[in-house]
Length: 301
Image (cartoon, rainbow, N blue to C red; front, side):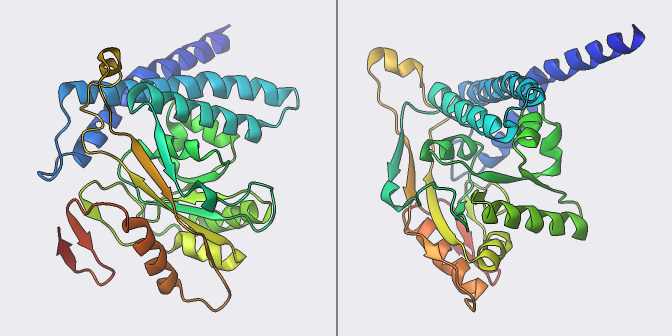
């Protein structure tokens, strides 16, 4: 009885964190919008960020538990988790971001047929909104996530069930990095694409140089690199959406631009690939703040 009571209390604590943890998400998103070059988050914007995360964690928690139960009966947990991920991303974006995600260049998306090697999707990363809008591409893929995400209520459970890749970013953890490439290569060879944000972190008013990971994976597997530009309107959180729809108000939509895939081949230079994809991704995005080049120099807007 004592054990059951302990399990029950731990479960209640875990579920209640669905309301507590989004506060940290609001704080993180506020930092991204602190630059004088972008509008700071107002109270309504912060409320939307909070609710966005509450719904995200709640849906992934309920969906994750359903998938977990299904796994006990032999159902494919990884596939089930991918369906819940898509539902969560779609629902949160339509509820709190905008009524439509526009996709330009959809014809450039590789056919999802399970063939090997699978492509590697890469995109710029400006906001947590990015994590939801990419599901409108209607493609299944694996994420590379910080190890700490594993402990987020609902989200961590679903990522574990979905067999996504985790990495420890504290110091130079060689074992973690080795596992990252091993699991990523395994996914690519099995016909399941990877999705990475090569900037490594979110930035609204900076363009950071791309890190090596995505390019190493693509070159080792001779995969196609698919560059994707995510354009997020600067007033996205502070807009009166969804209430403005009641009086016919207009909302600027998030736009995804899918660029022509670049085939990674043996002998290609990693830095050349970086520049090709970097130039493609930012060719359709406005320069909001500063661009930090590969040499460490800064270019102002």
